[in-house]
Amino acid sequence: MKISLENSRTQELLSAGLVSIAMICLILVVQLLSRLDSPWAEIAAEPDPITVFPDFASIPNVGVKKQQFFDFLQDYIVAENAEIVRDRIDLQRYADIANSGVALSAPEREWVLKLAENYRIETAQLSDSETVKELMKRVDGIPVSLALAQAANESAWGTSRFTLEGNNIFGQWCYEAGCGIVPAQRRDGATHEVESFASLESAVRAYFLNINSHPSYRHLREIRAEMRQFHEELDAMELAYGLGRYSERGDNYVDEVQNIIIQNDLLRRDNG
Image (cartoon, rainbow, N blue to C red; front, side):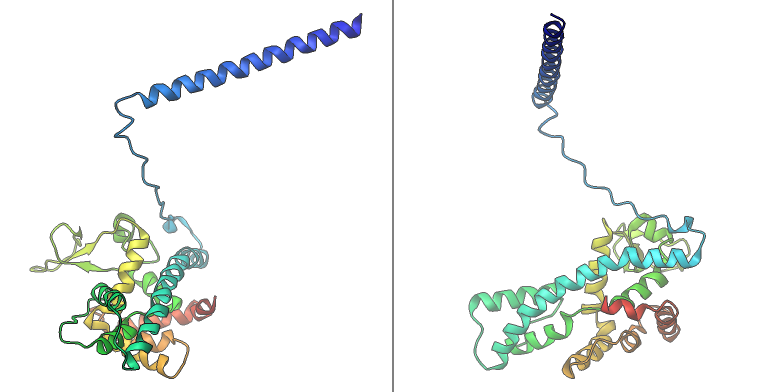
C-alpha cells in the first residue's frame, strides 16, 4: 500500500509539472503573438551590433597597453590584406591575358574597369594592358608591422579623441564640412576635418585605399612594385620611406614609424 501511494504521489507531481510547463509555453506564445500584432513590429529594426573600442588609456602598464593595442588591431589589418589578396589573384590572371596580347572579354574588361574605378585610376586614355599594369601596383597589401606602427603613431596608442569619437585610428583627413571632427587647434584658414568612420573596419579599409591610390604615396607603391618584381618579401622598413607625405612632419614622421617598428619588434608580426 505504501508503494502504491508513493507511485500515485509521483504521478501527481509529474502531471502538475507538465501542466506548469505547458502554461509557461502558452504565456510565451501569447506574448510573442501580441508583439507581432503591434504596429511597431514592422518598423522596429534590430539594432546594429555595438563595437566597443577598448579603453587603452586605463591600462597602467605601458608594455601591456602596447601589446593589447597591437593584438586588437592586427586582426583588422590581416582581414583587409586578405581581401586585397583575393582581388590581386584575379587581377594577375587578367594581367597575364592582357600582357599576352589577347583582348579581354567584355565581362573581364568590365571587372577590370570597376576595380580601376575603386582604386581611382583614370582609364579614359589607357589601354587595357596599361590599366592592369597600374592596378597591379595598387591592388596590393601593406605589411602588418607598417600599418600597426602608423596606427600607434596617429592614434596615440588608441587613446586619441579622433579614435574614440570617430574610429579614426590612422589620422585621416577629409575636406567637406561635417565629414568628421574639427581639430581643436586647426590653423586659421584651414578647412580640413579629421574624418569620422562608422566602424573600425571602415577606417582600416579607407587607410588601405588611401595608401594604394593617393598620389602622395606613389613612391611607396613604386618601392613595393620593385620588391614584387624581384620576388622579395615586402619590407616595412623600406616601404616607410614612401610615407614622407603622410604627415607634415615629413622625414621625422618616417623616422617615428620606423622606430615604433623596431622598438616593438613588429616585423615578427608580418609572418604571423
